[in-house]
Image 1 (cartoon, helix red, strand yellow):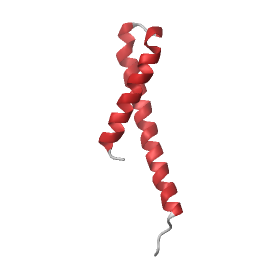
Image 2 (cartoon, one colour):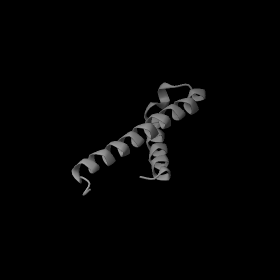
Image 3 (cartoon, rainbow, N blue to C red):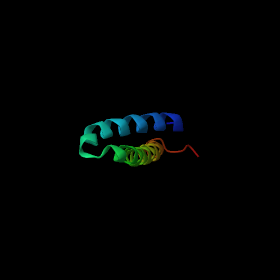
Length: 64
């Protein structure tokens, strides 16, 4: 997964999470919350991608 795709999905996820909890926050906290949600989503998507590549490598061992 390229970085643009990770960014797009993390941004989408963060917006959806914020929409769910925004009524529990002060308006001035929305941007801070969005940034935190985005960072978490991006990091987890990157971790997922790395794990998927690792597993794929184990399923298709090298022919060397």
